[in-house]
Amino acid sequence: MTDPSPAGRSRPTLRAALVFPESGQKASSGVPLTGAGAQQPNLPTASSFSGETFDFVLFPEGYILASDQTRLASLRKLSSDLNTTLLVGAIDKSVDDPGRAWQVLLRFDSDGSHSRAYTKHSTAKAVAFERPDWELESALPTFDLGGIAAGATICHDHYLGLLSRSLAQRGARLWVNPSAYNVTDIKWSSVLRLRAVENRFYSLCTLHSDVNKRRTHPFGFSPDGAELSARPAGSKILKPLSECCEAGKIYVVDLDMSKGDEPLDWSKLPPATKPKRPRKGQPKKPIRVALKGGQPSVPEASDWNSTDSGVRIEFAHGPVYVGLVPEERILDSSSCFQVLDHASKTNCAPVIWNHWGRLPADSSRLATLMQGRAVECCAPIVLSDKHGIHELVELSNKLKIPVRRVVESSGEVIVDVQNAWGMRSAFRMVTKYLPPAKRGVALEHYRTLC
Image 1 (spheres, rainbow, N blue to C red):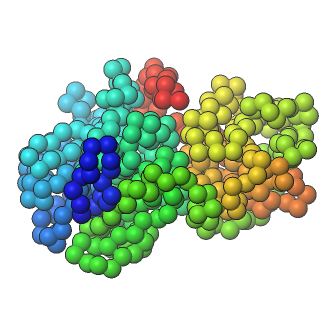
Image 2 (cartoon, helix red, strand yellow):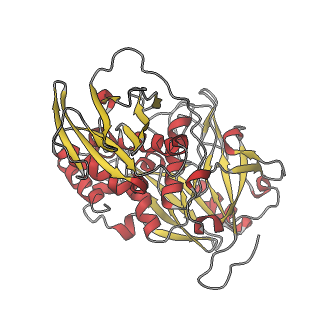
Image 3 (cartoon, rainbow, N blue to C red):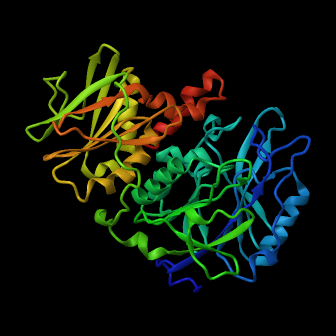
């Protein structure tokens, strides 16, 4: 580890510890679990970190109850013993309404203080977006970690791309997104990698490992899309984080902060590991798309000028909006949000078409990012350049699993908009528990980030 560089320059390396606790309990609406037989994870002691030093330690979502004074005191002591910052997920039950609870991220500093660093915006009984006094700087702050500007969200918030985009625009070079329990690997890895690349920062996520479920692991990606490697505290053996599956361990990750200063090299993005798959059976809600004179076209909309931003087409199965997102703007979550927003306002199923003059790399490398975008937007993504359509990524089922489709030799592509739910699904996780009167307010708050 090194001391901070002169003012205006970054530290070359930041060291993080990811706490990966074991849980034998099934998940419920209470995080952490409460009730008969429920056990909160054991708090690590300073000896658990094998005498190593860290710039910060990240714990999962819902690791403690914010009202548990005994565990709060233990965490303050741990922060002091390690002489570092702890970021700990907590559940904060409402005093006025015990049935509602906030998911928050608490910050413990070595001077014995602790504070709330962030309040979750989605999939909780109470969410930050519902507050009438919601303001960007207080609801989505950046903060210092080891001399580096950082920001945080929690769990499903990572689907809300405008949150992390705003953090990056305000200087964040590191983003943490602690989660609760075992997650679907392809969804979490696709979205977390996309966030790292599009915002040119590091992304980190840790969670609890429920031994009753399929195996999970912490996640981490660098600004160039590469998966991070880690080692257990006290060990020198590095493994990709996707192989760090031993629950109860504390995993150490070193972050080379210079990577965020480098321009993106599309050719070095990792290729998609999911092979292209032919469609089984007939598409339920098909639309045909093709190139015409090297430009995007929809045969059913012969008057569409693809230099426009998009086109609305009426089909027997309902209206569809095809929104054009040119070239590298596919890395701008606001451009993709605008397609969803327009489709929602016109009551259409959305399709996002990313068109290039010439692809900057093999299409499988771009497909790696498109998988994350399809999950985030709940919309099919078409990738083309003037030479042809190269990729189609769709959601294959209600679980939002992305799938790459085989592009037919004819050059036309059949897009199935059966699972193109767009804003209706992408933002439902925010409004699920909100009173109807507050749902529009929440969306307006989010829309301001665009």
